[in-house]
Structure formats: C-alpha cells, structure tokens
Image 1: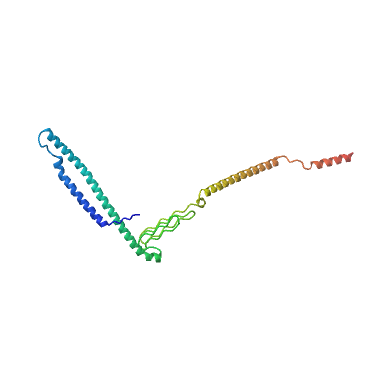
Image 2: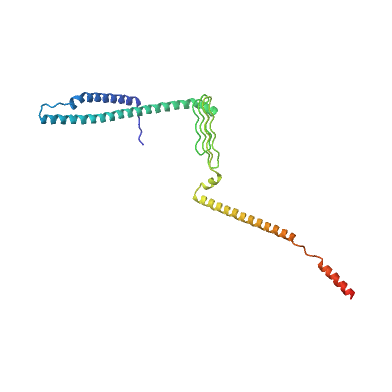
Length: 249
C-alpha cells in the first residue's frame, strides 16, 4: 500500500503560479489575435491573396486550439485548488477532532458522555444505545439496530443545546432467528409450518364433523319427541284380558 503525503501550502502556491502562467498565455494570445487573423495580402495578385487567406486560416485554428488549452488549464487549476482546500479542511477537522477527544476524555471517563460535541452512534446489529451528547452542546448518538429477536437501542440524550438521537429499529422475530443459520433450517421450519397447517386443517375438519353429528343428533331427538309415543303397557293389558277370558270359561 502506497502512502500519499501532501503539503497544502506549497500546492496552493503552485496553483497560484499556474494561474499566473495561464493569464500570461491568454493575454499573449489576445495580443497576437488581430495581427495574425487579419493579415492583408502583400499584393493584388491571386497568389498573395491565397497566401494571406492561408495564414488567416491557420491563425484562427490556433486561436481555437489555444482557447481549448486555456479552458483545460483553468479547469486544472480550479481542480487543484479545490483538492488542496478540501485536504486542508480535512486536516483541520482531524486536528479539531483530536483536540475534542483529548478534551472529552475526562468527562467520558467520569460521566460516560463528552463535554462538547455529538455522541457516538451504536454499533449496528447489537441493540446498543447511542451515546449521550455533550454536556454543553451536542446531539445524542443514534441507537443501533437490534439483533434478531432483540429491541433496537435507544437514542442518546442531548446536552444543553442539541437534539436527542434516533432510536434503533428492532430485530426480526424469533422464527426468522431460527431460519437464519441456513437453508436446511429454513426448509425444516417450512416443513414444520406445513405440518402445523395440516394439523389445523384436520382439527377444523374434526370440529365440523362433530358439529354436524351434534346437529344430526339434535334433529333426531326432536323428531323422536314429535313422534307418537308407543303404548308401553299394552302387553300387560293383553295378559290381563287373557286371564279374564280363561277365568270366564
């Protein structure tokens, strides 16, 4: 791995020098534009006119090429200046962050939160709560998303000036946690799910069958009640009548 070391001040100075060179070239091209593009014929013959036209054509092509080269030069200088400015801004931000870390180290050790600045966000997938913001000013860190079956982390509290962090999203459910290790576990879960559905379907069928049987039994009992009841003591009356007949004889 190669390392790049850039010095912003010399590069910005070099960009300024390049800008000066570009300005000098542009002024020279503007000065030479009129004498070269408006060249008059040396005499009134056709050869002199053709030579003057040829030189004017070459001069116009040169002006077009020089304009394109000047535009490229200006773009290169602007890009160099922007890169060095962003690099200098990043260096300043890193130095400021290091200074803040040194300043906030005692307050983090004692109170668990910085003195100045925003709190750290929780690590994703851990359900970790966001760090509280700085005591003086700073926003609270955002809570981390939860692991499967775990709630998301709470957002960190804000300081005197700032806003609290956003809470993390909860993890997926327990069933998804069982299916997470791989395809085999997911297939086993799907088979079990189909078996549960089949068992529920069979249970519903049994329940409907019981209800039908109970309705049929109720209808049968109702019909039996509506039928005329047979004479249970008929055989006793026949016996008594037969005895009476035998006695009369």
